[in-house]
Amino acid sequence: MNGCNSSGTLDFDGPPAPGRWPTPPCVLYEDEHILVVHKPTGWSTHAPSPWSGEGLYEWLRHREPRWANLAIVQRLDKDTSGVMVFGKTAAANRSLTEQFVEHRVRKRYVFWSHRRHARPSVTIRSSLVRSGARYLSEPPRPGQPVAETRFEWTEPPLRVSTPAWAETAPGSDLEVWPGTAWPVTGRTHQIRAQAAAAGFPILGDRLYGGLPWPRLCLHAAGLEFRHPVTDRLMKFEVPADFSSWPALALRQACIEPVLTDAYRLVHGAADGRPGWYVDRLGPYLLCQSDQPVAGEPWPWLAASVGAAAVYHKLHRRRLEGLGPAEAAPRPWWGRPAPSRFVIRENGLRFELSFEEGYSVGLFLDQRDNRRRILTGHVAAHFPLWGSGSGSPEEAREVLNTFAYTCGFSVAAARAGTRVTSVDLSRKYLDWGRRNFELNGLDPTGHEFVNGDVRDWLRRYRRRGRRFDLVLLDPPTFSRSKTGGVFRVEKDLAAVVAAAAGLVRAGGVLFVSSNAAQWPAQEFVEAVRAGVQATGRPIRQEHYVSQPPDFPVHPEEPAYLKCLWLRLD
Image 1 (cartoon, one colour):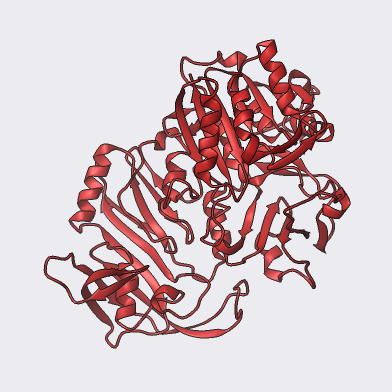
Image 2 (cartoon, one colour):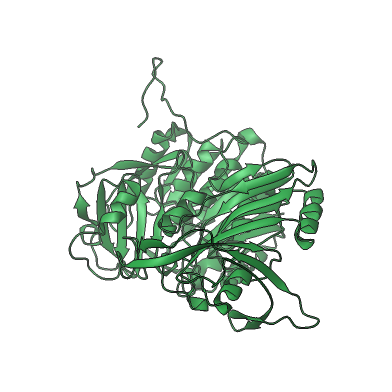
């Protein structure tokens, strides 16, 4: 918590200053020309479509202005972990691409299999032929590219036990052979397909016949190449860890622990737990599931992050008729939390509570968008505060609608703007004022407006109010005495039109929806239609989905839809 210094003013460290944010934990090395990272298992190198969650490449490229020209020069499969390099400049991209194409990059992979080849070393040269989701490793064909890998076994077999966090058969013993692969070429699924065809499929590779394991036991452990400008030999090594919990490893790769201790720890099927969702909220865990729970939570769950207590709530799609006490999370294990407690996000502090109904006070899936406001950087080549447009820095104004407990408002105020927060609930606005105070902000310097958002958008238009940033994150469904029923799929375009009219020339409009069944393309069309109804040209836009701690899975596609637009 904050304290007062000798002069009576509030002490607060807060988020880093612009340009001084720490690099994400996954970054191993950076200079002017290259960025070397450790990709965790479960995160795609790049997004498979514009509407899915960001791949590692997109997430990095849009995170910092200095990474805006980041380029892919190699790829790792989604379920393969390990070292990879990105180019930051045109010169680096050319040099690194040449080194990969000419097979001058030395790549070392390690893997586990329940079998090994009869010889201690074997080189496999084959053609890889696509067959559905798999690749078949066949004898080289004339005119087709040849994939070449050297496999080695220099260690005795290991006796391993399925980790306690495994979804099935935890504690089962298995003998595995640790091996090393040296790929000369770099074809899709090369090591996996060749290993399976040669009789030693990789552990956890269900696609290619490997025995079950909670993750794919393939890791890019070493990478050597010449620096694209200095010609210095660059060597990077990251040891493999096939027994640690992949869900935690993914979060540890993208969350700065000094700044943030609230995030999604388990996200359903993507983390091997269909129907289960677990949020870390500072010293507590909040579990959500479709069914009531019995007994105690998995012992490893609380231990993974040192949680003091675990809470549970039923995953409900409709809350009509439920009182706050019925919908609120309930203690499941450990010492119950106080009625109010504080978490960290991006260096900001927010008050949460398990006693105020279904929602605890902060939507964790908007963490990266709040960071965009804090840093003033939306995406590659998209600064939040456009040069020569909007208001001078000292006079910037932000309108946060459907403000809830004012998470976006706090970020905007810490970025130096004057914020107007509008919400139907006076209780949540009072909560927002406390969040301002937690962050060393004087709430009396900002506006907190209790009322229907659509009504207040009309009032601001009549009064001639204009804002440099307008934030729209409406609920999927709501009802008010003055505004009636609101359904996001039906009514969003009209609300966007009303909000767009309040954005200053060169200012930015942010629109978001978590309506899971609403296709992303239709959401974007509705937002564009709302803006076009005002006659305002869209100068720039950036679409983004949920952050990487909410990973996407075929059984659970991306649900969060966000669009940033700069308007003329």
